[in-house]
Image (cartoon, rainbow, N blue to C red):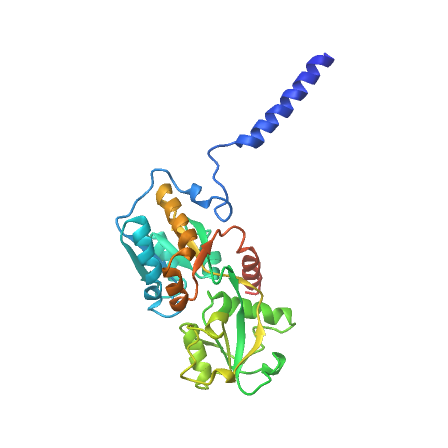
Length: 310
């Protein structure tokens, strides 16, 4: 009996080792936000004749045209036409994915977190700028140096971008909470909502608002800064910076063929080495892509905190 018990124990250990090695259920797909997300796509899925890529309108209704260097590169790599579509607003892109009007979506980070559970889609990449997959949001004003304190802006009128904008809404409000300030009552009511980041900065430049909450790349010196002709750059003052925010998330509709998803993901990862990457940096402000694994967890926590306030 003792020998038989020992044999069973050894067999149990061997079975456990084999289970850990090969996995207990070959039908279970990995978490699409983590490793090998393209494996969540079906082997015999849809292969569209034209790959339609939708984007959120963070630079206005011509945002898709700014990504033309990327679309042209993907046409070459995938050997099929690629068409860009700008969603009418931040929340509309998910509907385009759900209804099959686009095959791929490039979501602003908060839009992705809000919609991912309701979309039948798989995240395959996060955009990067200068090899970084994160950026910061700014609360800005105009005036002489030094910039005022955040606390001194109480009662001022602020321009946000959209309630589905991470840097133009969610993270600035999280910043206020971290400073012990009530985001619902700190600024003048009601706040102004701009069409996009450029419009928020324009409203600030012409004096329609006294504060703006926007994405850092639209403020830092570079091609995305729209204020060069409207106001002297030196008069734009950064009052506060948010925590790091992940860049845009690329998702593939859940019925797309796995091979196409793999090819698309590989092409995105290789893009930073192509000449079009420098062009995209000038137009879109981002020039590469990495895996999306776990990058949106902090953002999801901020979003849950925002929902709890309602």
